Picture (cartoon, one colour):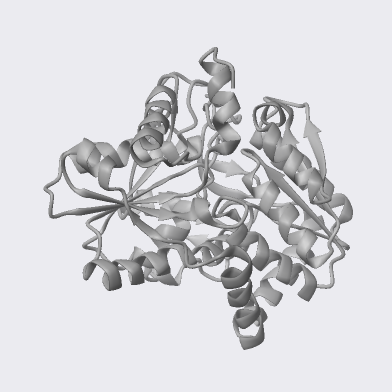
Amino acid sequence: MAPPTQLPDSAGRFGHFGGRYVPETLTAALDQLVEQYQQAQADAKFAQQLQTLLRDFVGRPSPLYFAERLTQQCGGAKIYLKREDLNHTGAHKINNTLGQALLTLRMGKSRVIAETGAGQHGVATATACARFGLPCVVYMGAEDVRRQAPNVFNMKLMGAEVRPVESGSRTLRDAINEAMRDWMASVDTTHYIIGSVVGPHPFPMIVRDFQSVIGRETLQQCQTELGRLPDVVVACVGGGSNAAGMFYPLIDHAEIELVGVEAGGRSDAAGDHAAPLCHGEPGILHGSYSYVMQDEDGQTSDVHSISAGLDYPGVGPEHSYWKETGRVQYTECGDADALRAFDTLAKTEGILAAIETCHAVHNAMQIASRRSADQVVVVCLSGRGDKDAAEVARLRGEKG
C-alpha cells in the first residue's frame, strides 16, 4: 500500500475511496484537468505566480495566534489559532480558487462555475474570477442564500451571477447538483471550480494540494515560534477542505493527534445532523466513493446543520481513508455547542469566527481542558463570522 502522502493513486483512489463516477460527457474534461495539473506542478512559473498571489493578494502567511484568554478559561493546554479568517475574503477558500483560476487559464477555458454553501467559496471564486477577468456563475441553495445574504451581495459586487437553487433541501448538496448539470452542458468552455475535497478525481487531490499551504505554514510556525510541534490539531469537517489542507502535511508526523469535527446538528437522529464520518456508510455522491448519509434504500439523506458550510451529506474521500486507517479521529459538535463557542471566542479573544469553525473551537476547548499546561492544541480558524452574525441574531430572536 502506498504511504498516505503519496495518495491518491493513478485512478484517484485513497485506498478504496475516491475514484471517478461521472457521465462520459465529463471524462475528457477531467482527463484534461489531470494533464494540465500535472504540467502545472512541474512548472516553476506557475508555482511562482501562485506563491506571489498568496503573498501579495491573499496576505499569506496567515498568523499562528496564541489565544491567551481562551486558554485561561479552559484551564489546560495552550490553544493556538491558525488565522485563515485573516486571509483576503475572510476564509481559507481563496487558497484553492486562485490555484484553480490559474488552471482555468492554462486550459483555455473562458467561463467559471462554482457551488457554495456558507458563501465563502462563492466569494473566493468571484474574487479570483474578478482578478483574472473570467465570467463567473455561482450556484447556491435558496436556504443558504437567505442565511448568508452578506456573502451573496459580495459575490454580486464582484461581478458574479448568483443562481439560487430551489430544488431538494435548497442547500449545498442541491447547489452541487445544479453546478454539475451546468458543467455537463458547457464543459468545452467552462471550468468547474469545486470548493472542497469532494467530487470526482482529480478534484479531491487538487483542492487538498492548494489548501496544504495551511498545514505547511503551521508546521513551520510551530517549529519557529514555539520550538516544537503541536500535540493536537483540530479542524471542522464538512466536505473537508480546510481540514485536509491542515492535516495533509502533518499526516506523517505520527506524534501529532489529528481531530476532525463534523456537524452534530440537533441530535443523532436521521436528518438532524450532517456527520457522515460519524454516522454514515460508504456510498457514491457527486462522482466519488466516500462516506455518505443515506437511507435504508441507499438514497442520499437530508441533513441539518446550523452552519451552511457543513450542511452536506458527504465528505471528501481522503477523510474517509484517514478514518478507516485510524490516522484521524473524527467526532461531532452540535448546533448549541457551536453557538456557545461562537460567543466564548468573541468575548475572550475579540474574534468573530465562522459558525463552521466554531464546531472545531468547541472541541478544541474540551480537549485543552483535559490536557496539561505544557501541551499545545492548534485550531484551524477556517473563516470569520461576520457572515453569520445576522443569522445568529435571528435564531436568538434578537435584532442584529
